[in-house]
Image 1: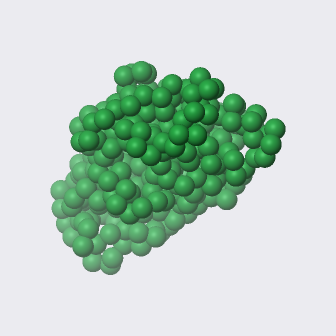
Image 2 (image 1 turned 60 degrees about the vertical axis):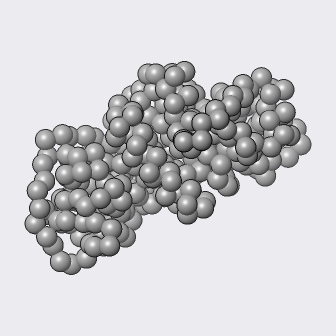
Length: 277
């Protein structure tokens, strides 16, 4: 919930955007509602962070035309399938869920995982650039191989080390705002879906009846002081200044199936995952 004191500021609603975070989480065996937009090309990046939710991975994998394991992300995918399946079923699952490529500085990729995927025909490429993370390297590689991608799903994003999580949010800003403004990035963890809102007004569809997302949300000014206005939350605000170290809207609640947020600069929006499988 937001702090009670409100401050006046400057805000503009010139840019309007409409988002459906749940469209990536529908089970492949269930038809998505007809009202959802037909997505453009989608890519999936698997980061080097523990993965334990096979169902989420399967749903994101099924939507992606390109799947890139960022260096040690290949270890995490391999471990996820090993812990989920045994014997012959594991071999089938491994071949069914091959990444399109493994890319990064390759300082985390284990020899046995690399050998396994190379035997199955997965290309492995090295980028030694020390001024970018494996996340950034992965984005650049996807943009080069498939420039028409408009949504990049990121799995294994904010559930690991704190320094890596903060670094990811830094990289997210740099990639989406300055390098790839025509691409939207979606960060998936076991507990939440997180994405950046651009200046202007964003209508976010969060249907509660299908159980893919919950009611707890946050509007986080991680990129600097912002002025926001919200509609559809339990604790709505108007012309409200928010900043780290000041007032923030966390643990707020969606009242219906959508929320509208207007902001004068980039903010991070996060919504809890539901329990639907």
